Image (cartoon, rainbow, N blue to C red; front, side, top):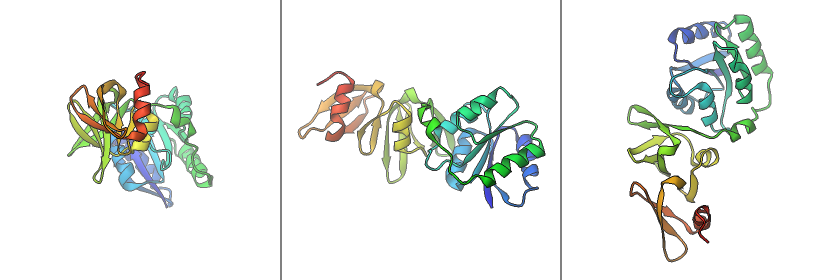
Length: 237
């Protein structure tokens, strides 16, 4: 069975696509989401093989959501759009395929045939050059869209990955590795990334390590291993 997730802010569009997929015995719709943040949560929880995602969604578009995914675990992604102009962009962002609304059964069948026949994993290389502009975060039952420039630092512990801003600290399901590779955040410690623009002071300590004081007066550790790169970023020798 091909485990499938549907992400679209239009309930009727999701229902229509789900009905079309019922005609295929090897397709199992395991979840639905009505925006990109819910979709990210479902992706991490359900681990689907295939995702149909609308391009035009509020706050975070389908294209932006695709750029947030970890290339190592990304399922096959099919964009669904009412606008043909997005087709070229969809392929540039490394989507497996795209479908125009309203989805034609014959066109859907061809997409599924390609998915069944494809043996090699999706090449994630085109995604690596796309920087993150927003981070999908959570605070209790509230979904938060945090602009990357508002992040002061990010850290990981046994409970997950946390994003610290001047307004509070939120949880994200993105990994430190993904955030380091896909954003301007710098590694300063094995468990910490820091926003260069948020650094107010670097306090040096014996042994080569130190501590960063952010502009919101938050303290971030710097290990000896990463101190040189942090200092060089600001022109210190």
